[in-house]
Length: 312
Image (cartoon, rainbow, N blue to C red):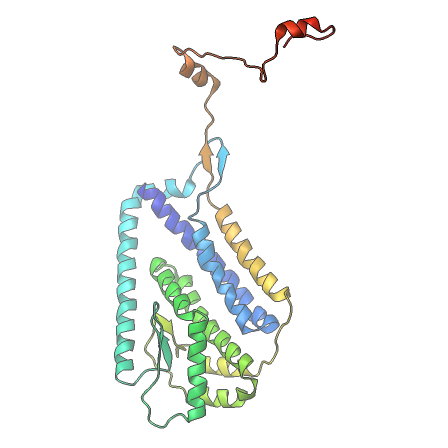
């Protein structure tokens, strides 16, 4: 049992890592062709692919070997213990980072951002005249767009994915890049509704405080990386909007293929039919009564009286 659980964890991580690599290849071309909003939806593939490996596998007749389960059976208990300890340590680290950010927010030194998963709320920095009234409206519009798009819950799911796959470096890289694409998609959604505020929006981004504190459960533009703000401002120049169903269908097909392929890589469950001799042995010592009934019942004498007809 423990070996099967550990094999399922390893299989989900391998499949999830392959899906992350696929998204890394497709995200920038998809952003250029179809826009930031549609490219962001590609990040649904890694968690769906990982989850698909946990669904009931297909069954086939015959015996199949669970190679991964057999390979990890010798150290299943130790492997599960190490994974559980890493999961707890990662979860504690994320919780500490969240508490630090909330402490900075209460002191007025964090934001703008959205915190919370069940009841998201907007956090704004202390009003010190940094932003004009119009800039503050744009910031609030951006954060409200995060809430409307369910981005805080998506960020929480990414944090949970990091904790469950703590030993997988691609899980952490994918979560980081997912947050970048999430912000780009939110920027595009705001400017789609406010096309005349493109210049003011870029100036507001330049004035936005980029804190080094991380926010695992919420939406906040991360400051780590090579000038990520330059990417964000550069994307504001992109006025391309792809109309039609081509982009959504391609992205949906890609995500669906990833999920189906992930489910298909599971080792099939052997299904052994009961041999004939066992079926015969199972019936030994038992009496079986069979009654043949014709419905509706007919009068045999009437049937005999009719020429050319055989009685039922």
